[in-house]
Length: 152
Image (cartoon, rainbow, N blue to C red; front, top):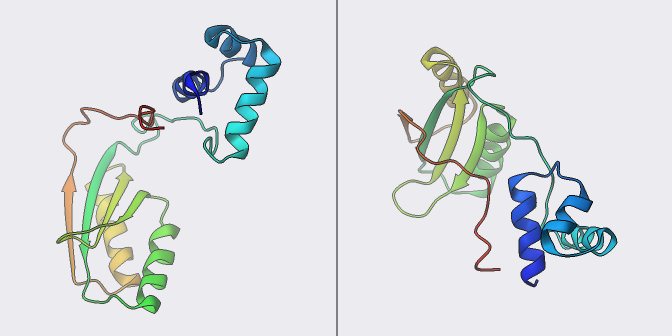
């Protein structure tokens, strides 16, 4: 990956709707070589997909809840059931296995506390959990989907 690839990625991280000709102009290439580079970045899996970022508030999903989960079960069967269950909830937009005191961290988006309680009740009915702790986001200070490219 060279400097031009990084420029292309920065542009695409900001706005994937730009025409290839416009991207090419910004990075100093003609259209065809720029398109080839984008295709190679896609084939290499560096560009995983092109998506639309939606406004959670306007879609009535403006409450963000970080859910910390601890478990006393660590066998493969429990993990498989837990993972399958969590992935089936559309409210869960991020799901991580953690190191340290917390075993799993979820980012959940819902319209309000009542909707979160419904989610919580369905979650604990699906899988046996040792401890669930919820933290409601009061304000989103920074949000980006753009990855730093200095390490690439």
